Length: 271
Image 1 (cartoon, rainbow, N blue to C red):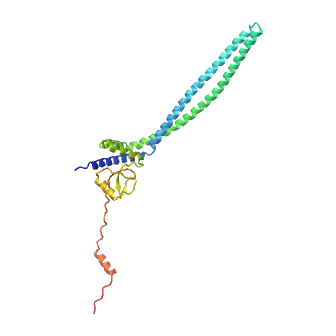
Image 2 (cartoon, one colour):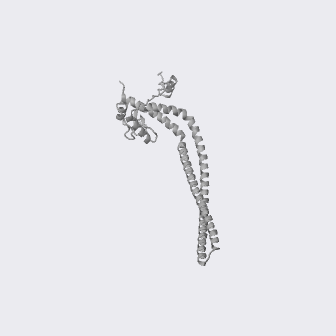
Image 3 (cartoon, rainbow, N blue to C red):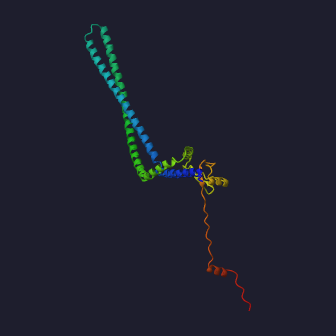
């Protein structure tokens, strides 16, 4: 009669073998995928910063244009008041126009000061853009090199990875959700990615804690899903250790003679 638990454990073990092979492929890639992602995020940050700086630069340039218009307007009004001042009829009008001219002169001076301040801000902003663009250029070079390196590694394992992923998809569908969910959770939490292990040399294949003989007997029976009481990994089976006895070396005739020679001497026959 077919053992349903044994079938489930076999399916889990096969899935674990596939996942372990995929882990090895990812391990070969090392930190390159993470480094590439970090560089892409950093570059996106630089690009956003440059875009923001340019928007601020546009506003500052518009501010300079506005102040220049104010200066032109002040100069226009000053010229107008000068013409009016030439045709005044009394001192009162002369003084009133003179105050207006002083006010426009002051407006012009304030606008010029603001222009100088804004131009200083523009210069700093342009320097910041230049520095950020240089950093962006360096990061783009780094990203290009990292991507090339990653592409070479991925191309070497791409075919194997595709096969494993297809096989994994097929295998995972054979496992019921109530087993697949804990399997996935254990794999996420396990440093080595092992969720299903064998008992090897009387110890858990994941955390290496000793598994008592009675527990091993229950694991061999495969009547129920048994997990390690220390790490929670699922036991698939107990790996049988085959003890190979050393073949006893047969004593050769020469060995016997040698033994005799080395042994007690024969008693000489009585005369």
